[in-house]
Image (cartoon, rainbow over all chains, first blue to last red):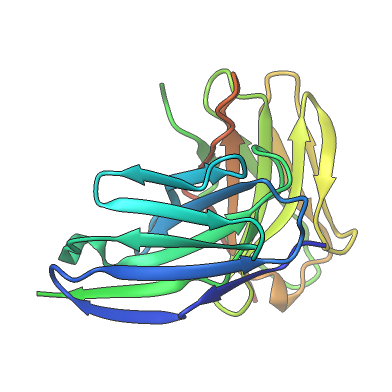
Amino acid sequence: GENVEQHPSTLSVQEGDSAVIKCTYSDSASNYFPWYKQELGKRPQLIIDIRSNVGEKKDQRIAVTLNKTAKHFSLHITETQPEDSAVYFCAASYQAGTALIFGKGTTLSVSS
Amino acid sequence: KAGVTQTPRYLIKTRGQQVTLSCSPISGHRSVSWYQQTPGQGLQFLFEYFSETQRNKGNFPGRFSGRQFSNSRSEMNVSTLELGDSALYLCASTSSGGAYEQYFGPGTRLTVT
């Protein structure tokens, strides 16, 4: 079955810096890759996703890149702010809307 | 539209008991997935229901089961509770019409003593 590895497990940056979180997946059949942000005590919130027919997607300060050949995808956050502090999860699925296999999460801390 | 709702929000049970958790998806969403979240294992997929049929199942023992009703509401049941079942149980409903994003509910925090 699918396995998703996520690195790093913790990431500390200064406000205004960029943050990059990387994930690799094992199943070449996976074609949907969402990213979720989870603040303490709250539900995971979808922040961006990408499908396998797209190499990059941007939404304001957030971007995701996908390399299907290498089977890895990354989340890029630019101009980080303290409110970006949270746990970020990557996930993979062979079909959008069905079983998501999650990485272990990255705790991002943005200090001002 | 109202978001995904889950009841109850908190639950304390004793080992050996069984528990039923409920999830109401966003109006119009026909797919509901369940996930278990623990500090050690992270977010793990339990099962997914679409139009009252289980479409996918994760790697959990048969003590974990679920069902979906004709109005898309879903329940999951855990029988013979073990201490290791203590977790946050999240359900997610999936949008349709080509988008297919999953939106999570607030979760049910289950504590087994």
